[in-house]
Amino acid sequence: MKKKELRSGYTTGACAAAAAKAATLLLLGAKDNFQTEVVEIPFPDHSRVSFKIHNSQLITHNSELVALASVIKDAGDDPDVTNGAEIMAEAGIQNSEHRTQNTDSLMRGEGQGAGYIQIQIKGGTGVGAVTKPGLPVPVGEPAINPVPRKMIENAVMEAIDACRGKASLAPAIEITISVPDGEELAKKTLNSRLGIIGGISILGTTGIVKPVSTEAWTATITSSMDVAVATGQKEIVLSAGRTSEKAHMKKYGLPEESYVLMGDYLEYSLQEAKKHNFRKIHLCAQWAKMVKIAMATPQTHVRFGAIDIKKSVEFLNSLGINVPPDREFNTAREIFDYINAGDAGAINKLPIEKVCNAAKSYAEEIAQEIPVVTYLVSYDGRITANSRAG
Image (cartoon, rainbow, N blue to C red; front, side, top):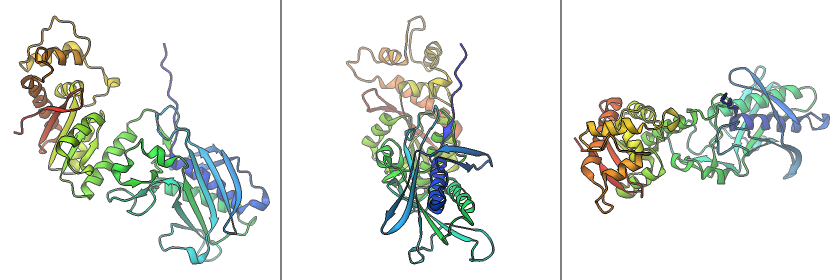
């Protein structure tokens, strides 16, 4: 049976740019009935993509005319928490007395004459604010990353250019990006860990979301380490999942900024930790993932290969852990239970520590000069064994 090809989608940054262009067209071309049901915007690779506008309207706010437009994000077949979210843009004329020195601006023509247009991009409801250093956006600014910001500027400038000669152009346009459900959606992300408070981030480096790609995971891993360095952390905690992370937090309580969810991206995370010059790496995982790491598996997700039970048994025996090779085991959990059988629920630490030590050795091969301590997290969420310190 032929495998279904997964469908790509569009980033929050691309959706924000399309909504901003539609809102600007509506604002500046109000008297000319500009078509804003579909807009086309430029992408970073110089391609062009059309977006359907979900909603658009002109309203009066504080006696000023403003335009609203929105796009429903389509992430394709990627399991993105923002898939289906409404990304909104509000466009308004900015009065000179309200302009700030931090205004993002583009220039058309020479000097600050008729060809000069300022564009200020702001974050509204549901767009997070940056509160920690280390991210590509300064502390205090809305979490709208540089590429999406540039996409918004370029899209708005296209709208301005389209309205020249058909509408009175103001010297400054203010664009406010909002996500009505952004604050709730952000609870399903790592934004609070990164110091992004109050909503989601407007992200994307290409405008395209590739389904089930590594880009989102690896970008978050790198950003987490950037924040750790910027907040003075010398040690990093890599965990395969939330349960493992919570277990380490509960027992050792290192600063929140030192915890990085690596998921299944072991090799990438260790290489990034080396690039960031951390002094020590703590590595936490449950049994199946720890065995995979001990067996020198650089990428531990099941789609890169489910754990081979027969090879696992052979490997454990090579460590001196007596697991009968002729016994039928269906899962790694069954092997774990066999090793600990007869101990009234206690963990038989000696064989478990051997696995932790093997995982430590492999991790240190990748991290090179950085020492690694591995921690096995039990199925009930407790750290039950760790590698030797040396």
